[in-house]
Image (cartoon, rainbow, N blue to C red; front, top):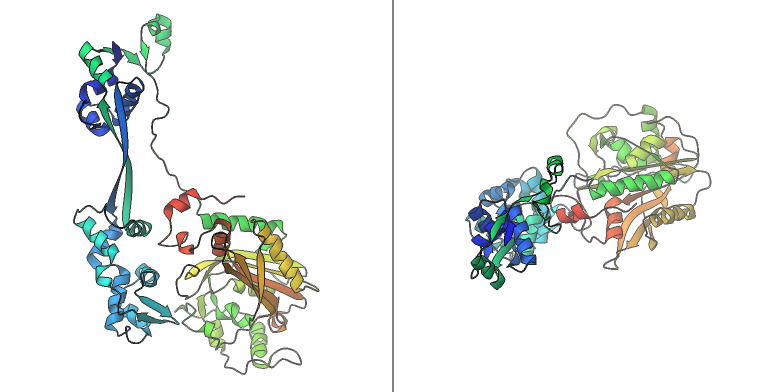
Length: 503
């Protein structure tokens, strides 16, 4: 019997008693693994061999993982520093513990993100408390990293621990399908009777047609079910995809996009919003101040009007705050805690000149807050800012705008809760129902700008405004319950590769 050369080689190299892997057959025959695989499947289809498959998983340390084997995991180092600082008895200021731990740069965020997750303690109002009963010295993630560094097998390790290390990019998971070939009785019989190598070709050429040779050759069969190599190309991050879709929706609703600096004067970020300078949100615990020279490009007359609103209020019933107000503080630069700083620049006419009613503007940009990291809070995130300037606006107009906007994303269960803001009255928060847990989660804040905000800016009509969370919109759309799955060092890479934003 005549068979293709690759099939004959596999038959001769395979065993009837022991399963031989494709890799071993390739090494023995000198053929490529993919050629051996194709030959094995063809022989299997003819009944001469059996092909068994198993999934092998191997784990390998990344460079970052190797570094942490030497230096220790950031959260473990943070816990040790907290214990040494006495945080098991009374909370200690977070900055003091971080300084004592020797952590710096991205390691600080990593340590804070995993400190609470592992139950090492808690962080509240800038103070860190450590749990005296936490067993950081026997951290299961450390144990796996150490075993891998020592060349030991970790297949028996907890799957959740391995998954966490992979998501943190400390360990790489390599999955491989291993195929093994065994001769059947028919295969053994065929070898005993004798098998010859047939001349096979893998393509038809003009020369074969001209000479008539094509009538005497055997053409190679192609296995269309054979595995092809996986090729992963780059793609737009799901947050950017969602941001782009939000922009499309708002443009379709008649809005124009705003642009402006990420680092700005506190004047634009807070003072124009009638936020008192001694408000807790304006302390170093909640904002990221920058050690740079103050901003000079602020209209002096606008500064005077805003200061007057803070000190004396606006209108016959205005009373102001009777609290300290400093122009130096107003000109100091910080990372914006909300993109409402852009709204203030545009409404004042400073950015694009004086605007005539009606107007609609939006932005979808990053903001920065010194929050405690948890499943719904990050130190930096995307805010969907928007406002409408027109005569005789009401809360009903604002609610209707939200209903129209969220309906574009398949979200119809929106609830509103009265709220207090220094800069809007009336004000209310927005809540959406999580599709998996059924829990109501906050998705934004909104209201009608107060006279104390609008009059110093020179705006004489109504302005309704809002700030919505892009990441929480994503949670409602796809059922994520932890925004760190899509953003930051703990993000789920497989999820990011597979999910596409529907348009």
